[in-house]
Length: 390
Image 1 (cartoon, rainbow, N blue to C red):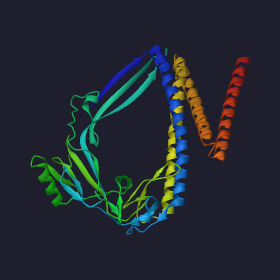
Image 2: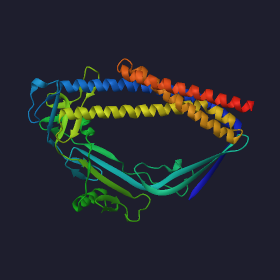
Image 3: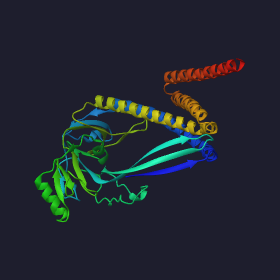
Image 4: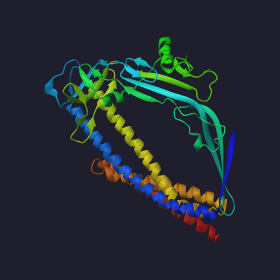
């Protein structure tokens, strides 16, 4: 089933809306400039903290705690243990591990939409949005009140939700582990439920709930091959009790976050017996990846902001659809150049005190882009003049 919604905006309404969008664009540009400044400072501080930590860390055996190292940055690698099994109170299950992850999905109606726009001579724009509905597995409840057509697409409230549980009294060797350390561990392994566990689930839920195993996971419903709205499929995964490596501050009989002079709180955890040097190298690589990800997102935000600022020009020209398309391409190109250029300038300024060579290189790229834009403008004016003279 699908529902269509058609909205037509006059040229004047679109122009008024685009002018109002200038403020939004300016706010977005300002926010992205701030984000770039913050990101560069964060990257430098994190890099310095990791370098500081790499020079301070001390190797310690996991099975021996020496009070002489209290307050220091230590690296230990060893087997893990927990004071009690992981428990799922909703289903009455127990698992041996460091973290229990329960993924809950309910079969429910999902709304999707597709929008097509067309501009007519005179600048009016018609937007046709088609809403379609199909059942699918979702971890989050799809509220029918938000559907364009709620009738016939009712989803019952979810009785269960996705959740994580951490082991109590977790340790690596003789050292106690804080929850922050356990939360960092990845590599959760899906658990295939047994018939005994299914019996425990049925006893907890009662006879009125249809519970069965399907491909090793829990299924609540009549037929997993033909799911019905309101059915559940639930998967349990655990981070097992195994050897891990930890870098952090020794405090009495535990390991927590170590505050560096550079300002960061270090607590690194990886699976397996990892050398401290390798762990710091991995952390530096992760810092670089995060830095470039934020840079890319902020530059994309700058481009969007400038696009909103320049959008009134496109709307003005859209009285003739072809002219509007040409103007839209031109303003998009200008917004791209302006966003990238401003992004590089901000990065260069923020890094100048810490990475002079990188800053100079970025400024050279900005200058080249600016010169290219000026040359393109002169070429267009010259071409226009030649056309007029002919």
